[in-house]
Length: 257
Length: 270
Image (tube, rainbow over all chains, first blue to last red; front, top):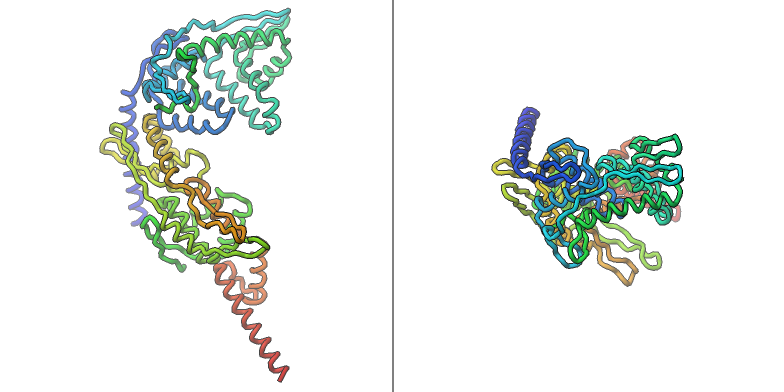
């Protein structure tokens, strides 16, 4: 008898949960925003941030540098999961989409942590004239560069996190910046041609990619870093207020005033 | 099996079964290994029901320690002097400091009922949020969040707007300010004993409980050896008894031996 009672209660509670989820799904269908994706120029519908995503971001706030990388991956996943279309978003789309989602989900007030509260509406009109692909040549080496997709950005970041998790505290002190920079370079390389040999960079040869990048001539390495820095500078100019205060797209970005 | 009715700080009433030496030994092993997750799971199997908040859980476990293991805890102070503190006093402190902070967080048609977390071990920040939410209501439909599996909790949280999270976050901040570090043992400068404070909102509770139950394994087996060889004659009932009962039986045995020795000495002298 008791077992029967429990079963009825459980099935009632499952029905309640299903009903609640259905109701919330219909509510969420109305809570969307349309954003013009910079890399495609197409308008795409996105659902707003939810509690689980916010929670996942908060968890990254206590992990130091690794936390910053993790939060970047969480944002990548949010863009992919909240989009109504299946599209390979570019890293160049990221800040713009996240800022729009943030404004619609939690309002435009942004606490920059310096006792000043800004309105995200006061950010400059975004410029999306990024150079998505380029070729650099040095002696007999040709490097094809490309602003990575979010998918690639996440894959390489996960590899970096995996490597950092094996670092000792001493290694973190001495090797962290160098390792992070190497992986940042890997993200932006599409392929490297040396003489007649070409290595296409993908998610399956990250170890080989790392070895190759560490062997590139310093001059070429610096040219790649400059190219990436140009992209980052342009990206940052879209999220910089008049007084040069920049919006930080990390776990703290979802804390409204 | 014998059990005891216990009134908890929240007003709930539970029945506490005896802690036999079999479970006690498992607790000591978890404490020695500093495996707080395993220790908490064992306590949940033995004593803690899912509806109990962290205050009540703390109370139940201290009560179990007092009743079935020993009523005092001992510190070694200045000049190796043993200073004992009564667990009963700590229980009174817990009762006196109990705060019930239930709240309804409302965002549009969504209402979250929240309260003191119903857990005693927090593996990650997820646990803190999941243990704090009691129910979720949208319009007329309300679901008991504490009864959901982790998968269903995630399903539901995936559908709640981010603004609800800000309300939840602010409630937890308020809660952590309210449930400040609770002083269980005052500082004793004369004997060089530092104040013992426990942060109720977090793993401070299970760490403290672990230190209450931590007992040298060698001493435990020594007690088992003496009991089996001197008292029970190897009957094997040690693991069915509580630690307090065994100590009581050893004391009775010791007194009997003393009495007999005294009588022998007396008859030899006369």
